Image (cartoon, rainbow, N blue to C red):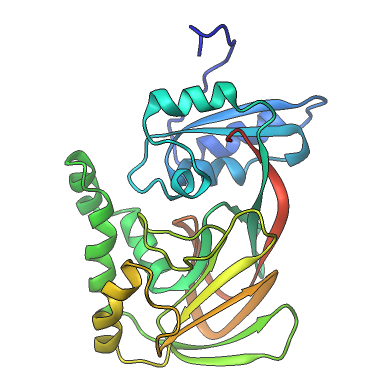
Length: 282
């Protein structure tokens, strides 16, 4: 961007919390709009989102360099660096997009751009964050296969819970034998798995996908159908659009936001924040 005559300041990140801390400091007391461009993947974007103090003063851009890049893919940002930079420079004021917020009892709110969820995908995200397999596969350019391998292993080892789910303050619904619940802002997570094929990040809605009430073997056999987005309408899958969803479980369950570990929770409210983020994208 220097070659294009754009001044910028670089902030290297040397820890898992550095991006959040930098975003917090940059946006804590701003009087005019600033642009923050993230060079990284889905985790980096999430860390920055969770650090922003005043979204009304921030324009956010991305140059993708992660293994999954679901945020870039879902927001129409090119994966090739040169094309991503060109889009940044020609984006003008950008566009307003939705983001989500997960609020668990006793914890600070966590923003997300892609998804939040509990169950299998959350456990996989927790395991992937410390997995040596991910490091090896990333070096080979096969990072997304980390999630496929960990998903199969987690499916057959996890304990299925019963959860109570409430959409937009309506009547509580019980889901027994939960495998996962994914509250999506974008259509895909986990390196391109289309949990909610019709999710749109500009409609002011969450798209929720729940897998429950089926055996682990049945879930495994349906996995290819999920990967290609043909699961809506299939027994064992429940899809619902809403503006917020409240989830309660008797036992602690792992929460993730954009693949980042969000703790062990029993009570969480996940909601959409319409047009909360100005994204430097066309």
